Image 1 (cartoon, protein in one colour):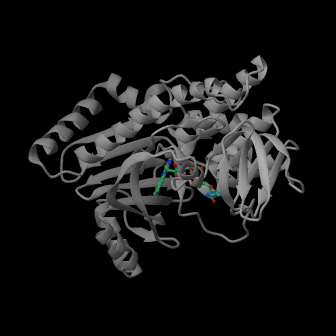
Image 2 (cartoon, rainbow, N blue to C red; image 1 turned 45 degrees about the horizontal axis):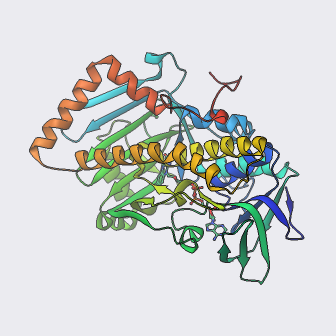
Image 3 (tube, protein in one colour; image 1 turned 30 degrees about the vertical axis):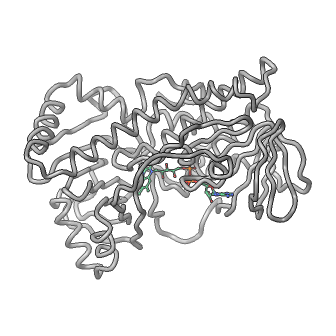
Length: 411
Ligand SMILES: Cc1cc2nc3c(=O)[nH]c(=O)nc-3n(C[C@H](O)[C@H](O)[C@H](O)COP(=O)(O)OP(=O)(O)OC[C@H]3O[C@@H](n4cnc5c(N)ncnc54)[C@H](O)[C@@H]3O)c2cc1C
């Protein structure tokens, strides 16, 4: 990848170089397209200081295969990825519990927990090696024109044209706003408190999730007895959790986890993120496609957000490759509708399922309490149901884009 000196015509221009945008740019470059990548904050490719990123993602097998096919996985492995073999989900005070085990379905693990900065750095290392990608830093998008070709106009008076603009600029997408694409959704009135913690009894290569009235607490295993926690709760409790002295926070967290891994101790800073449900009313306009959080934001309780975004990237790559082969314009609505049809239904289904879980499990209604305990108990004791969930955790059971299939190093 080189820094762009001149601003010229591109096949596609990707705005946002996070996990999803960097994947789109890399997939397009590997497919032979000329790509411009705009990112407001160029990410570090490595970092000298010890410590862990408080933001992590639970990656499915489908995402792993995609990252392998993109060449990023080997860099991630060299930095840090943590496989998890088991998952235990349980309800506060209730008897309801479900346990998943990779061995049940003959898999080595149920997925990997990876720090977001590791995923981004790995993708950018691969982008660095791509001559077909030009990086444009320090540009602020002022306006867009969705003609053919599409144009991005910048605050500094320069502009850029491409057959297709890809909005990968996150939940508060400026491109989505400039294109006048509305969205529906709501605040969950919850915040996710995140931190890295050390567990007295280790993490047993297990992801733990306990549902509580104000929201779930997830303990996601990292290397050497650590967890990354995602504690979803009311904004008031989140504020309190951030302000509590360390020892009190640790005592409260250990209690909330019911001590399943012994005493939990902070290993770094705490941070909190507001949680929203959000879906764009359309994913495409002539010359524009939305991907990742720019198109959909879901509750993190099953760790699916970036996995869905990577599938967007994979399907868009398939659609663009086919369009290139058949000589169709990359920004044409015929082409882009294929992308939208390929992703919107699945994203909506996962979003509604997570929304349903969130309501079912954060509710003190005695009927729902009974229902969820019965449901967890049933799912735990009926192997076919349990295995179905295990396959969902692996990102299987749907039609996958080419990039998420068939990597020789990955079963
Ligand atoms: C607490 C929490 C836990 C989560 N856990 C998981 C999990 O376990 N598994 C999972 O799959 N998902 C998880 N998610 C969701 C996941 O983090 C998001 O889905 C993912 O970050 C979306 O990636 P993205 O690349 O679409 O957007 P982002 O990560 O938001 O990246 C957008 C990029 O665009 C850049 N940008 C923005 N605007 C501009 C602009 N105007 N010009 C140039 N660049 C711009 C930004 O700098 C950024 O680099 C979690 C989310 C939260 C809040």
